[in-house]
Image 1: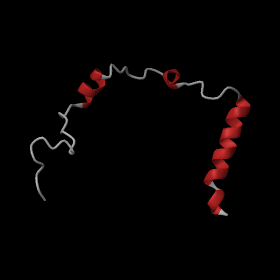
Image 2 (image 1 turned 180 degrees about the vertical axis):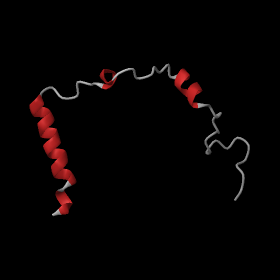
Image 3 (image 1 turned 45 degrees about the horizontal axis):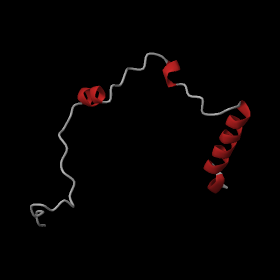
Length: 65
């Protein structure tokens, strides 16, 4: 195996290693304080959610039969 020649940019440059705390601080993240922090309005209605769940169930069990 050979080493890349100077000026050969085909290899990614190594990134400095950061601790988890440094990575979180760089992204300005906040701790999760309650389950409400994780809520999202993904589905517009209960019917849309039920359709998604039925589709997901059917896809997961499609090859089982």
